[in-house]
Image (cartoon, rainbow, N blue to C red; front, side, top):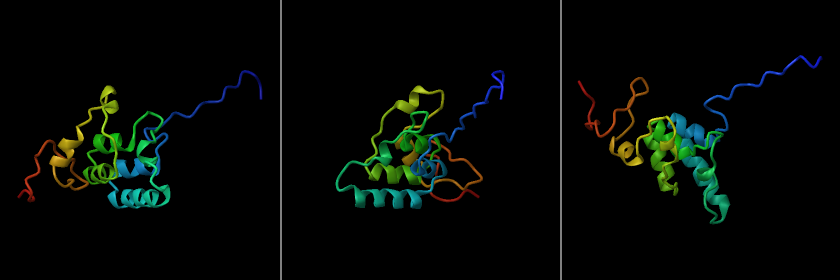
Length: 127
């Protein structure tokens, strides 16, 4: 190899640095999130959750991803486990709804249609 040869650096994806809890937040996998959080609680011996406080490479916590993706089921799991609500996600160029708006929107929509915020959920399917 010569000195003129440059190695190309891989471009980071939006998933760079995601932990399993970030993936749960991204895909609204609330059952998997609950299992991860319950397991950590059993083995942590009272130490505050590391999973809730571990950022990805873009400094987003799992709660930021859940809010950004309107993953209301995972958001409820994160809040129940003691996730801290902060505003770091609001400093980016990404529109982030406050967690209260997502929780108020009710159950998530079907995968084919995005959730509507705030409070557009009527409690029954539209006809």
